[in-house]
Length: 174
Image (tube, rainbow, N blue to C red):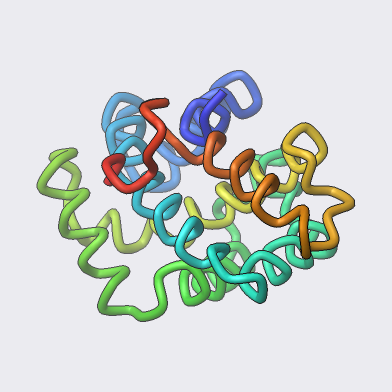
């Protein structure tokens, strides 16, 4: 199952309903927003983990960040702490606020959801991405990873999970 599908199915769709309520959107609009934001975050994540330092940083964050709470308890998605943590995650994945703005702008053009809403939604979605990955880490073989020779295998499993349209490339999912 892809990262997008995992998030859409979180708590039997409660995460989508919670986001819709938090941002004043319909569920269809929320799904469209997620479908356009998550591939960009996946690509940022893929670029980030392409170095051993980035991969080790991700493994450390997945192991110690308690990110699962964002998908285990969807009521956390409206909290200020979630937004603050999401902004930190975005800094790691996308690098700058300018890139985050570009992601929101492109997603707005594709989804029909306002750019201002997507800018506010992006940090929350980033926490959901990390929460979902944290929850899926054991299935992806990432829970006990040490890097080194295992890095290419872990990267391959991670790439499969991040590939939204299952065509073998994360880059075209943006």
